Image 1: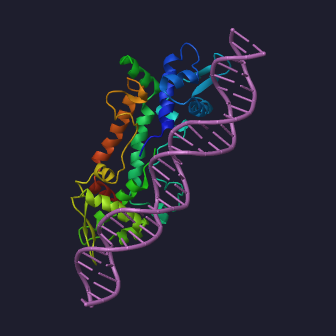
Image 2 (image 1 turned 90 degrees about the horizontal axis):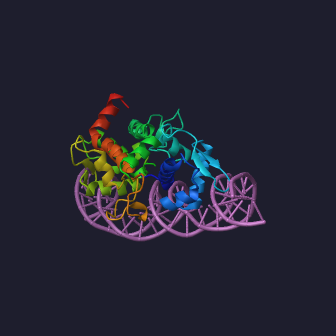
Image 3 (image 1 turned 180 degrees about the horizontal axis):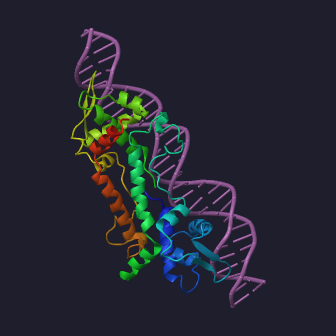
Length: 141
Length: 141
DNA sequence: ATAAACCCGACTAAAATAGTCAAGTATCAT
DNA sequence: ATGATACTTGACTATTTTAGTCGGGTTTAT
């Protein structure tokens, strides 16, 4: 079980963005240089973030991105959802009629994975971008 | 972020095993049929479980596997570790000197991923095989 | 005008996953 | 004894996912 770079980079880039956001739009080029993430890849990620209205773009020279919502309103959950990073412990939820493993009942451990998903998601739902920025500022990184 | 089938199958198979264990050794063939998991694949998985002393094998006709420890002593953490299912949120922990992203500092979100790992692992450390079996019996599946 | 920046779809190499396959060895029931 | 059952082990492979790259746009400040 691991987190993909898409999810990680999205969070890293947004934390970076959130720290400079108050002044001017931040260009992906700057984020790319500061965070060491490929520019092309960042563009893919921000396309998704924009579509989910987490960031807003400003085109042209001196353009870039700004947050579209307040940092405390943006939860990790929203970010991951935007870039298709989702918790998938089990694939047996689609068909409501028949259970997993093709049998009429749920698989032996079905409830366990549900529980696990909830456990992880509760973490993501609590943490906001603001929390992360504050945490970093306290440490004066 | 998703769980691999190796981890899921290992837990499913062990829950199955734990329910019949008290009587006779359980053959992989039976588990394979009941849980709908390929026999060859199960063999791979049980090889690892045996090496980590979670199960014990009994060869020959009427052979099979039995738990090597009490069900309440086997935590999810042990199972996942045995089959190499580990939580990997970030790869930036190896080099202690230099941080992630090649820079001398830790990446902006380093502590976050640490926290997430701990959060998930705490779940795995608590849950035992016994918990899972009990849970299923209550529901008379 | 032109450079800086976003926009967007298509493509791809590499790694991980989810197995399969083949060739054993041990043990029990008869 | 012998055959059937079941574990043992390593090698192999198709598929999927990941982690990007690439190329060609469009918009806008200066």
